[in-house]
Amino acid sequence: MKQIALLFFLTLIPLQGCSKQPSNPFPAKSITDPFPEFLVGTWQGRDIDEGDWQLTFAPDGTLISMVHILGIEINVVDGMAYNEGTEGANETYILGPCTVIYDAKTHQLNVSITLEHFEIHLPIGDIEGYSRDVLTGTITKDGKYWRAQWWSYIHIKDGRTFDDSEVLPSDVYFHKVE
Image (cartoon, rainbow, N blue to C red; front, side):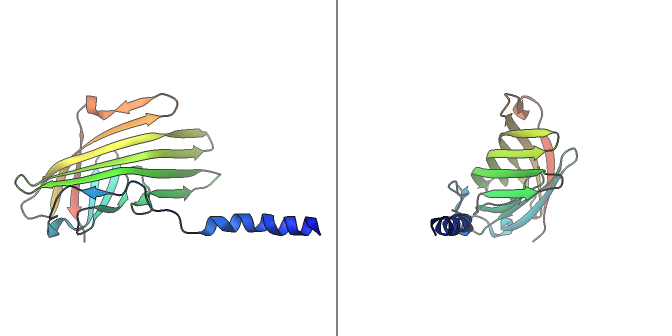
């Protein structure tokens, strides 16, 4: 009888993980008040060498979702993303602080994104670390395009660091899609 009770208890343990995940402890914030209406919505960007970005801004100027250059969509409110691939590959990203600043006088938009932690597990090995990306540039007068310069800092757990602040930034060309 004790064995049946123990088995029943052990089968309930995994169900505890189905509860709602806690929200992001580093909510996105905007230093701009008020945030201009023409910036609200989704912006898609392309870096010629690296790939695609997508950023979605709320009416208060906070970043509410994004597709990071690493190719994963992150809901900023949840603060994390998980993707399972083939052959045992998977990746996890935990978002850190994100800041959005818009200067109406200069039409300058600055976005800072921190991945507090990422893990990428591949059949050939694992990569783990954290990163910070900064996108800064001028919005066109018609409010439809943003040419941003992108700086990236990536630290890999094994001690390797890639710091783009020592080199010229990449240009990312954004356009408003919705």
